[in-house]
Image (tube, rainbow, N blue to C red):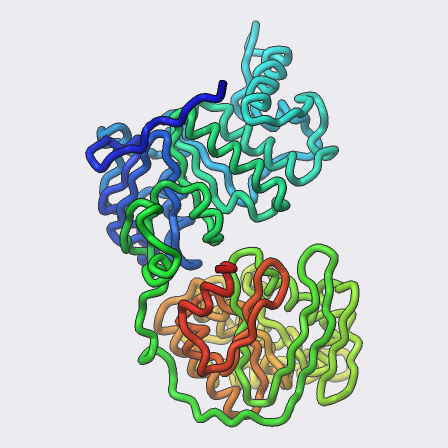
Length: 506
């Protein structure tokens, strides 16, 4: 007979885990601003918010990775703190992350008990006990897996079950699920729902983080909404509808934040048709005009960045046609894209966009060495001249162009990366999350410069997860969900609610 879930917690019940007025700051950024969060036994609490709302930061606070600057953490009503992740684990808090680190060359059992394997005589690993306990945990979550099999021989869904089993290998009272269905099929998602019900029946408190509204309304008992690092509201899921939840997520006035633009949309410059990839996206098609800023919006896993990387030649699609100025251009590499007048400013500037150990001027000229060299020799004066021209246009704040890039703020590093690609004199520029992780002043400078580029006739594609940025800067917006285009919206049709509804499939 199936166990019955505990009765829903009431407002008077004591949460297993509670955050009260918790704050977390980084230099120049308030990631969490006096937030609250209550997790009750036998209940699923959905943490809802846009990208950048503070959800990942609060998970790191709960698991001991980050230490809060203020506020209180309570377990069973008693104030506590988690100086390390081990302390959080000892308190019964475990997390299943969207991208849990597992090891293909280890067995299922070794992955489950990595770091806390049962020990026998002389402190040696008790392999028989580890395999028996692994089998018991796997059985408890409905996973019929051999603990001795190598992880590399499992599919994605079964690897995810191993990650769940690993999280439950400690005596967990609180289970955090961060976008747990991102890599699962439709059938596998329903199996995860069954697992959540089992965990509820065991009295575990579950924090469920998802962008998918159908999941939230399918399995969550309670909701908590964060916006811009602040607590907005909470309540029971059966007492709110999707529209009200969307308004709580995006309720901001964005009309005065962005630069006024004299929009002069010119001739068509880019046509993309039939772009497919076996795992990331399908049937991507659109046009782009000179002087236009075309926004791409979507939630985590929508496939926007993956498509942009294929368009720029970093990855290879199975098919797709690119026309620039009416001519078909075959782009097999970034060099082909640059030669065609198409450049890409990546989301991860530290790993993909710059070399932080090099000085500013060398970063700016990396993609334009043909302009600063002669006879296979670099001309230092030409490098400085080119770097000075484009960094001044972006109002870069640095003591010298000799300054090592890694010593600059995130906003100034972003300006250097943009300057690098503008120095190639492109026709089309793709900006992937152009203001991610930079302060408000630098954001304003980037927005002003984007407006200037469009006014000068440059065609701009802007990928952004920030709804105000999409609304404030875009002439037109394409919304993607699960690798496909689901809407193309003109400027007059853009509202926060419309974007979220299309992106979440509401």
